[in-house]
Image (tube, rainbow, N blue to C red; front, side):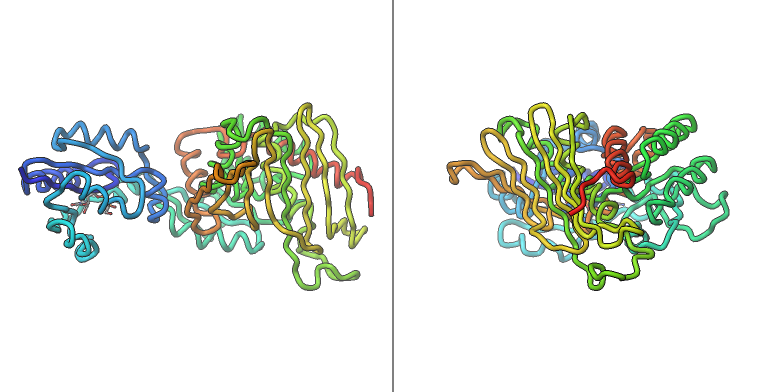
Length: 423
Ligand code: C2G
């Protein structure tokens, strides 16, 4: 019996895929089809599959061509599969010509002609592209422009004619967010805005209501929330593996030349509270909830007039847990995240906010576990994918719940209202 294997994503299964499967089957007697998992696709740069693994698996199954279907989850699995299933022929479309020649050491490799004129990308693009305009000149806005190139179905437009765009990315100073968001929402545009979305909780509540009434997305752009490693970390922390969470401690610093000097010009520069506060607060609120009992803010102001904090420490007390964040633009510390539990802890090395890696550690070191997930483009491209999916799926928000955004606005507001201790 000749056993054949082929692999693919098979997103929005189309005629080209079916032809490929038929040709693959015709090469032998028994066909195994490997469907790529969502995580594996992310690591190989395919970030916006429209369908989940389950949907793609059942689409392949419904063709009735495959004798067996497996999931492809990791780099190097092909060799393992070829050995495990005693495969005679590995085959794939001619768009991969030459790329799998190394498998010749294990079985015969056949590149089949690719069907012209049809692709998942074309089908995805048929549903109209979301046109996004970037407002504001902060550097992150530029990055978003560049990263959008990796996302199917979203394109950047420079036009400020309201008919030419569907969504905005707001990269202005935090004080300007409220007015910009309000204008965009009233114009009927979806909004992805850098955090803090507003520096007053009531402002955020008003904006949230406008978005709700007009069925628009108002999303908080903290890129960390969209990274795979960070999402897995949340899931692992909540799984109970480290026991009950008793503390979340996050540190975010970025020391830039000139910022720490007295009399420096702070125009156009975000203070530590706005630049780092939201990111540092994210794991605190996402793991412990937003109902803290009390908090205290300690800050070292470099410019009182501009309310520019060089270093800020915030302690939160919850019913059964504590949390702390340390953030700075004019001080430096190890940028790590530690989630302390009653059975063990999660450690994310610096810079934890753009991480692809974390560890779960226990008293007995041999029980430690390491987790690695590829992170491309600091997570920005995943953020845009999530935003686009929220728009298409008519969801309320992306990866950050309204409660968390609201809590971040509220802490920011307290800081702006002078509810801090100065050191
Ligand atoms: N295909 C084809 N004709 C098309 C489109 C796709 O013959 N018009 C083939 C591809 O060459 C591939 C299979 O259909 O063999 C699945 O295509 P994709 O879902 O795009 O998966 P791909 O990323 O090519 O995955 O490591 C190899 C990959 O797993 C192959």
